[in-house]
Length: 262
Image 1: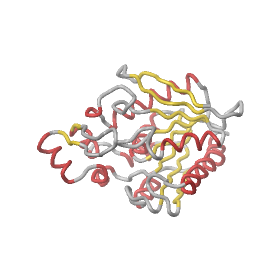
Image 2: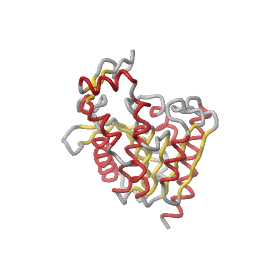
Image 3: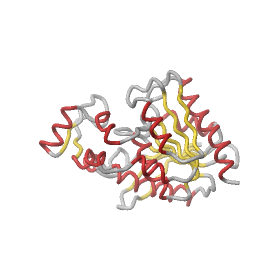
Image 4: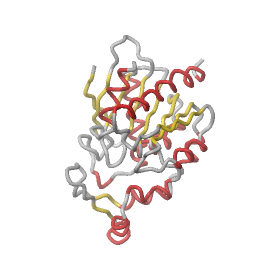
């Protein structure tokens, strides 16, 4: 079952998303999914992930960060640190409406950065999944921005997007978003998290080289698992790649979380 939901973040902005509920009375676990940048829950990965996870018996929340349609806020004011706060608002809402002792935080791409930055701050997060995650932000900033956009940041204080057919086409984002790539400590945050961690990545990822998955895995504490999916690109295009991603998450929950929640 799919339900449309909405809730407020710490700034009073309304965030909108969907909850997928499994058919069985009791879900295996609850999963909050964080989308990438400049993506949304209608993106190639997200729109397939929720329905696939609910079929495995999980209750799933997917929502759009502030500044992403159809949530409130301006795209130009996006910050990863703001998305981390949106994550707390999402978890607060989700667990109040659907109480669960087994909560997994799943982040893909920039959503994985947000998840990695947040998880250690919240003891309710029993499992962390980092999908298509970067290792060090300072090395990854050029995966999101072209040379021309970086010049715009430094000369104009913002960068413009050209993405024909995408909702972000023609929009601007302030340099503050770029600056955070050099101030946020992702490996340090991942290392502080004391729950179970799964790092999953495609070996054909065309956006984030697989070496970053190994760096994120190295930063994580035990219990942890690294899964490299053969032939999978950044979006896990194709039924087989997505199926392997979901299978990795399912196995992670059934084994590592079972051990940590005894």
